[in-house]
Image (cartoon, rainbow, N blue to C red; front, side, top):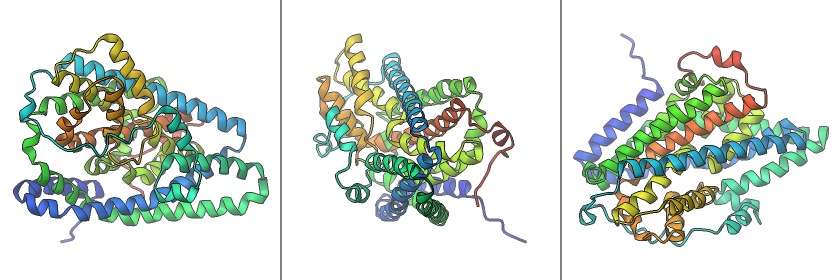
Length: 414
């Protein structure tokens, strides 16, 4: 009798379930398993910089014309801003409708020291200046995707402008990109173990009981994110004539992995490969997806809008319509360009709370369940960026309907 090894998605799911059980029944050992999960995340992060660097350069060099690059960038950023703004508004609206923070007992809620995050927020001008690297190698060493994208965009434009003389560099970038994608497949063999360790450590440290006093917030967040995905993103896909559910099925393994690890970086290479399979041209995928990782965080934006109102409600602070409108405006800027910063959600929330006069120490109230909410918002971020690449491809008239229609229910790259 031949034993058939389960697919990657099933292996990850088993790792997730076993990690929950292990962390619950053996909390000390669960916490001790964390280095295995950290090792997996570090291996993924190790290849993100060269993948983004090569992909963006190839994407821009593939477009070639500087005017086309500018048009593509304008369409992409406009889409990102509209999508994230809708997400922020939905988060605020859901928090107000369901009164997620009303009636909470502060003494029974999880407490944590978040002082390490509260001093890291940047002003808008500082954020813009930070995008420009003074040393690209330093930016690469720190994993600053914004700086890498900025340099890669200009490098790609310059490379395209020199024509045939740049062909050896283009060929090298193609080889680098293909090598990194192959390396990704090798690293993904460790994904089930990484997921098991990360979940076991989270449950071991906080326990399932931490969800009880904050269960309403977690439940409303997940319901709102589901509404955003199927109503807003699904509606956009319908208008753009994108087969949305086929896209979801195609990236199902990546969604499960992103959810389990609470890291969208773990699926970046595979998402880009599958979007090309879905009918999006390589040049657009190479530009839109890496850029979306810093500018199009739909799940994170929705969560931040809800969390601000939640903290205000817990402290019994009534926010006027104008105050909530100002929160939307603040989040529209503070939520951009912060990918890769440790505790990024706390950084954004700290900046928003400070600017609106709300208690920054309220962040400690949600620290215990932030990991559980991060898993959901990471998956939404991945869906949002995947759809963004398809929509921009459609707007540019380059979406391959034939490729999308011909995709089987689940496609697994070799």
